[in-house]
Image (cartoon, rainbow, N blue to C red; front, top):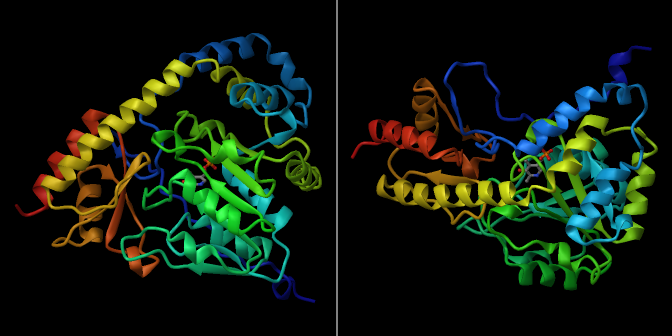
Amino acid sequence: MNWREYVRNVTPYVPGEQPKIDNLIKLNTNENPYSPSPVVKEELIRLAEDYDCLRRYPKPDCDALRDALSEYMNIAPDKVFTGVGSDDVICTIFSTFFHSKLPVLFADITYSFYEVWAEYVGFPKELIPVKDDLSIDINDYRKENGGIVIANPNAPTGLMLPLSKIEEILKFNRDSIVIVDEAYIDFGGESAVKLIDKYDNLIVIQTYSKSRNLAGLRIGMAFASAELISKIKAVKFSVNSYTMNEPSLRIASAVLKDEKHFRECCDKVMKTREWSCEEFKKLGFVFPESSSNFVFVTHPKVNANDIYKALREKGILVRHFSKPERIDNYLRISIGTDDEMKALFEALREIIPQ
Ligand SMILES: *Cc1c(COP(=O)(O)O)cnc(C)c1O
C-alpha cells in the first residue's frame, strides 16, 4: 500500500497576505484600523497576575463568554455557540447540518471559503449567480436545496439585503438550514438575530474580527434555536472539547462592556467609508454601495491587477481576486484610518490617468 493513494487532497482557502514590510498600508484583509478597546489591555494585565489559571483546562462550554453574549444580545444562553473565529464556527455548522444529497445554495460571488468547506465536509453545492450589478436576487433561493448560506452584507461586494428580504428567504425555506453570515453587520446593517425565535431553522453567525477590532483573538459566534445549538455542540465535542483558550474567553467577555468604543470605531469606519466613496467616484471608479468596512471597486479604463501591482509598489496592499473571472477586474479595498485612505487616494491619483 502507498499512502499517496489514500491521502486526502483538498484545495485550501488562500487568505489575504500578511507581509512583513515596514510602513505598509494594509487594506487587504478587512481588519479594523483602530486599536481594540482599552478593556483588552486591562484584562491582559489581570491575566498576567492570574497566570496560574492557564494550568487548568478552560470551560468546554465557554460558559463565561456564552453568558456574557447571552446578556449582551438578550438571547437565552442555550441559543449561543462560540468558536475560534467564525471560520471555525461556520465549518462546524456545515459539518453538522449538510449531509443531504441536495445541493447547498450560495452565491457565486461570496466568501470563497464556503466552497472550500463544501469540498472539505463533502456536500454538493450550487453556486447561484449574482445579478449583473452583483446583487443577490432572493427569488433564486426558492428551489429545493440541502441548505442556504448568505453572507449579509455580502463579501467581497459589500452589498446588503434588508432584513425583510432575509425573512422572505426564511419563509420559503422552512425545512432547510438557513445560515446568515453577518461578519460585517455592524457597519450599517440590521441583524437577523431578532428572527431566531421566529424561525427555528435560522443560524446567524457573527465575529469579533472586523467590527470589534480583534481578528488576532479568533472569536466567532452563532445564534440559533436551542435545538440547533445542541446539534452543533455535539459535533464540536466530537472533535475537540477545548477549542477556545482561556485568555480569549476572558478578553472577549470583558470587551462587551465597552459599547462606547465599539460604536465609536464602527461610526468612524462608516464615516471614512462615505468620504472614500466620494473620492473613488472622483477618480472614475465604479462600485456597488457598501454596507461593510470595504469597498469593491472597478475602473472602466485601468485594469484592476495593474492598479493592485502599482499600489503594492507604493507600499499599499489591497485585495485582488483573480478568480472567479467575473470579478477579476475588481479590487476589494478595506477602509483604513483617514490618513491611510488619504495616502491611498494620493497614490491612486498618480496611477489613474486624469
Ligand atoms: C472575515 C470573514 C469571516 C471570518 O472571520 P473570522 O476571523 O474567522 O471570524 C467569515 N465570513 C466572512 C464573510 C468574512 O468576511
